[in-house]
Length: 315
Picture 1 (cartoon, helix red, strand yellow):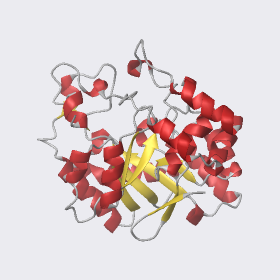
Picture 2 (cartoon, one colour):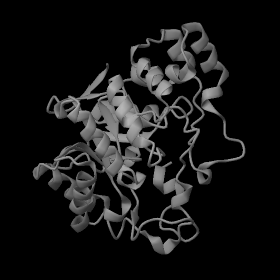
Picture 3 (tube, helix red, strand yellow):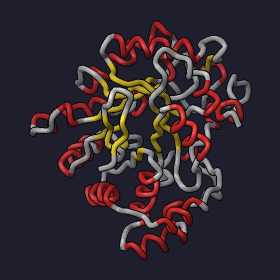
Picture 4 (cartoon, one colour):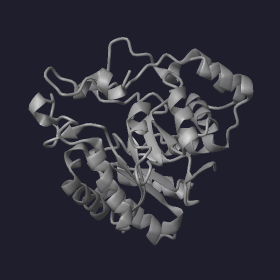
């Protein structure tokens, strides 16, 4: 299993199990099966609404002999807890729900602040400008979580290079940026920036998020898992398209967190960690970039919002 090494020499398995969109009643069984298969990296978030069930599954796994020190558990601070006074409460709720004494990695989920839990559609009154709650305020409270021993490492999610640059002089520099990343959205500038500054990158939706919510769908969305070039490479290697996509992400030096609740697919995804793509296949996949986001952030930008898609991604 490839790993990513952090500044204190902690190592994180590069292939993990994502739990976004894993429904209550299914996610626990998926986590238990993943632990049986050999997964040791579990990615969570408060907003997923399933951390209590994930926590029960982790407890079962540890009861069956999986050592806590062998597990890497990531979670994320939701947007309603960006004020410095609220950050610790968000972390403590997640720790309580997961039944853990500490998190291995805790991320600021989005560079967006909310005044209350989200509903659909969002209204401008639900959102708070970063002028009112600066990202630096949130980050200072994240650093305090490390000081308190509640989390071992801190990072961000959905941050652009420009937003990462603003954190380079922080007392504790971010160690991770979790972003949408796959062959249609390679983000080479972000990957290069991370390597230069010691910030790892985790790819969410590495398979193209085929089960993303309807609000994130368009009429002409390309289906990554049906890409002809990926299918051809998979056939040549005797692998599945999903395995090719995951192996590509791992060989780039990033982490990947595919989500599944299907036992067969959990096995297949885990096996991708052993798949080596030849150089010509890596080059062919690199050529597929469309700068195509499936999770484009438009839901943060209703009319009158302090956020826009352009300001979110700094593009």
